[in-house]
Amino acid sequence: MSARGIPYRDKAVETAPREVIEWMQLTALRKQVAAALKTPFYGPRLAERGISSGEDIKTLADIRKLPFTTKNDLREAYPFGLLAVPKEEVVRVHASSGTTGTPTVIYLTQHDLDMASDTMARSLQAAGGTKDDIIQNMMTYGLFTGGLGFHYGAEKMGAMVIPTSAGNTLRQLKFMKDFGTTMIHATPSYLLHLHAAIEEATDLKRSDLKLRKAITGAEPHSEELRQKIQDKLGIEVYNCYGMSELNGPGVAFECVFRTGLHIWEDRYIMEIINPDTLEPVAEGETGELVMTILCRDAMPLLRYRTRDLTRILLDPCPCGRTHRRIARFTGRTDDMLIINGVNVFPSQIEEVLLKAKGVGANYLIIVEKAGDLDRLTVQVEITPEMFADDARVINALRDTLKSEMTALITINPHIEIKQPGSLPVSEGKAKRVEDRRPKA
Image 1: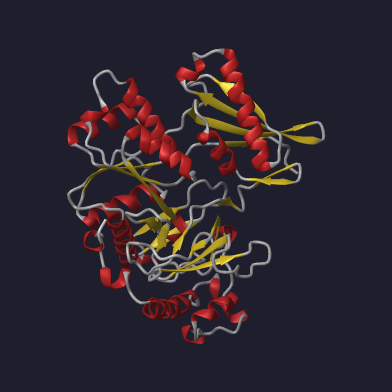
Image 2: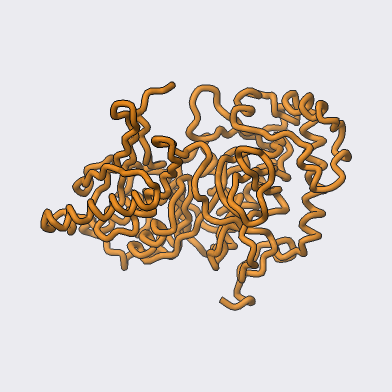
């Protein structure tokens, strides 16, 4: 793609010189610290560190004077401990997905919603979305921001949005065909389920659809899985990163070159830290992503520990954007499995599975006790063609998966081959891991 054809929403900001981006960040950070001082949660914590106003932040390096914030902190501050504006200024409340017990809530003013929508619109346009797109949003609507956050951003871009939400696959296919859907938003696992439904449909062919792009989120996935979806559906697939705590989807997004995810640095400050020492890692090294939001009035969030592991990409992007990029996530500090003393990430197992010919879309990782030791079992579906093959071929596949996983994770797993469609299919966020070990 030529430089002339690169899609921007706000080229002046997206290609701003580094010093301009850092000036925007410092100005906004001071305002966020001033707002945080008004909250019952941050007020005393900042005072303990000698911070009494936003002007105490002299340079961006002073962000290290601020305390980290964790998901447990958000639960501790429930329900209004992080609110920086009068309650009557709040127009919406969201809550983070996947939590139990006390929820982690997010408050938004109308200005906050407008900023979140604009951030999402910028992300969609970076990925080549336009006002001419017909976008079908297959994410759950409700307290989870993935549905509504994406929806409002697509509308802000000017596109037609079909809020089908998750599930009801036959209706999804009907709307895709009848309305000429060009872009969809869904989890990677649901996209594979969607492809299987297209293959099974008697009144629908892939050529009946106008689909050209898919945006994936809510579920970590490997490059191999992205390629599998692209090959099956014949579309481009773009990776979207976000979380409810940070205003939802669109925090980081792939541009049309798909060389990593651009963090919108006029709206967030990014740090990469060692999750054990809490010190910054060297530029380009893998560590935990820590984010400070710069564009929210109702609820400041300082140095939020996302638990996601990534690294900053040092080479410039061909798109010309100067906002730094991060690499595909390698896992999370809190979904890491410790098996007989060895650290294992589910994404490592997925990497092996998706490279193997004859492996289907679904798998399940099970960790349980076998005597005093941990036992790792990987249940994996195979394709109908492989299932119909000779038993020796299936056994050879099992042996290959076992040896390649052992080489990668240094754990000797048990591989259980499952027939197509035998593992549960999720229409929302796929459950890939069951840790059945007794809780300490």
